[in-house]
Image (cartoon, rainbow, N blue to C red; front, side):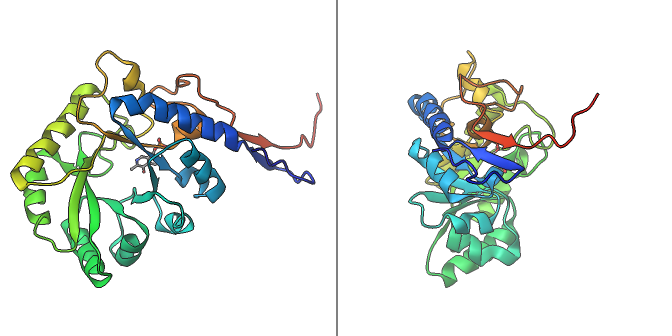
Length: 261
Ligand SMILES: *Cc1c(COP(=O)(O)O)cnc(C)c1O
């Protein structure tokens, strides 16, 4: 799994695919018993296919990236693809073409995605983002119902999940009570609008620490979107090494060009 530079050309990044695979497998084995599926987040390495494949060999269920041009590179890998960043209206058609799910919080964008999906003869699945205090993206909790009521009328898109992003802009540390609110909102919307929900996504590498806490993930959270903890072995709420994962899958090698007292 190690590809060293044949002729050393510096600086040089050594990438240990076996370590990435092993980290992905450990993560998969930790979360599977909790009924939590994992999206392998590929934006940290601009979706280099060999690295993404290593993550998938570890058993991860979805591929997720913030950019459509990255997902395009991975279009032949046999997993459902997820666009993590809220779509730009201008890229609606490519979003439908190259991702199975996208994260959303705007009615206008859902209409554009719906139009694109109809044109392409498909239905695009959307995960609605709820803002629970981090202020990166999402609908404030008291406005979710109004949003869903409008969204279910849009042809070509189908609400298939709810999600939250934490510790991204506002530095909010994920807690059980916060994630319980996401579960409650999702459940209320599922009942009221008869939704089929595949995904209740409880965050990123900043949420993983909860699995070792007494007050951990509430029942109902069934997905996480993970990049950093798999690539660098660290959870991101407290920056701690997570459960014995490898921290040296990526090694930057450089030459010292001056060494003097
Ligand atoms: C990048 C990203 C993630 C993954 O974050 P990590 O800290 O690398 O695990 C999850 N969700 C969204 C919306 C993202 O943009």
